[in-house]
Length: 237
Figure 1 (cartoon, rainbow, N blue to C red):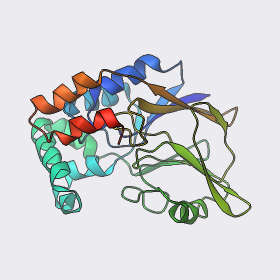
Figure 2 (figure 1 turned 135 degrees about the horizontal axis):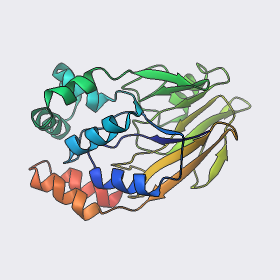
Figure 3 (figure 1 turned 120 degrees about the vertical axis):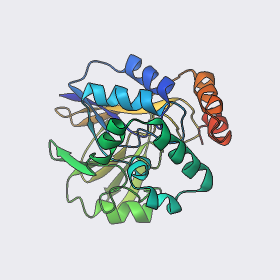
């Protein structure tokens, strides 16, 4: 079976719409968290994900909407967006965010937002962090997001390797698979990033799709949110 894997939508409706239009036929879609935050259309993104009934995990921005005490860990601008988002969302939408799980398992794979050892907050960006998390997996696969950087961390004779190309990759555990960010990529490519997991072929395909960045930027600016979150969409950083 094939599953779409998305993460870090971050209230970017135009990017989410483009990903849905690009996605091939799949059994279902799995969302690794951070539906809201940074972007200007949180309600639209949340309702799209919620109405489709996707298995969705909680991300740190999602969690902050229902536990504002953790905003002390956010920078000032990110915290401003979360407070604005809380005011914009309906009670039923906040309730949905509040009840998202922080992990799930499907076909033997672990799904988390951030990392196997810290489901919501740890960034896997370097070899040492990847190694510590890979050692927790035995021979399993873990799908995660949070860093907004797509790629696959694996172990090769005890050494950590990171690979990323827009193509189909064979999966062999242990490995950490990050589909990248739908709404705010940070690998230098501004196109929305997501992937397709084939459980029978044991493979993962990275996909990128262009979207209307100007419209997404306008939504941020029209909402009166920090302008840097609009500007960075052009840089993919």
